[in-house]
Length: 123
Image: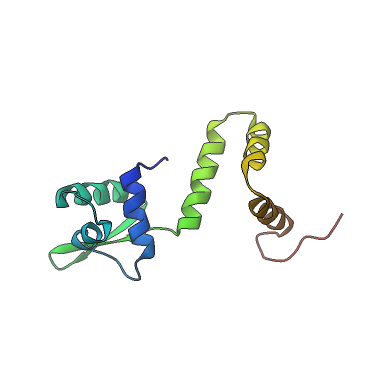
């Protein structure tokens, strides 16, 4: 699920917030010439996509990201990988060819560590 530029900007504000934000909070933090209703519409769409949690606070709603930035990035990468069809290996190789040395090393470490956090035995 790809996000538009404004959706990404709204998500960035939610991720950087320490507590859920109102539409007004997000609107003010964006520091752009946008209508309040535009921000309200974007937040509503993000909530329908399941990317944002919406909770009632009196007459207003407060919004928070449903997952961390890292979790969402992982989901987007998995979605993209699913879109390639059968040749996932070629897509992964092309991805690894484009990342920098630090990212490549982080991938190596991640592949050498099982989800439980315990290093896999060598060999």
